[in-house]
Amino acid sequence: MTSKQEFREVPSPYWIASTEQTNYPALDQDIEVEVAIIGGGIVGITCAYLLKNEGVKVAVIEADRILQ
Image: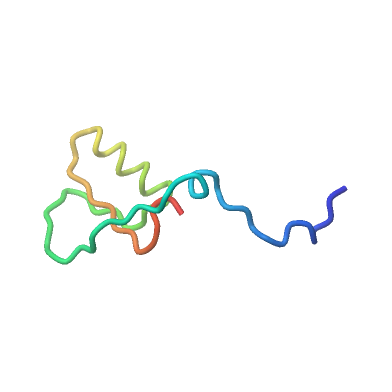
């Protein structure tokens, strides 16, 4: 049996550990979209993807790293 002490570090998800961090410019002007999604986690990105596929103009606002 594995002891809890062996898992001191929280492992990084594969999609974060295996890719370089992307950088996007800060939103420094007004933009027009039909839907603004606050949060670029798995739910926010999935919603943006599905809405975009339906022709909706979408913006994702994320303070840190997408899909983190």
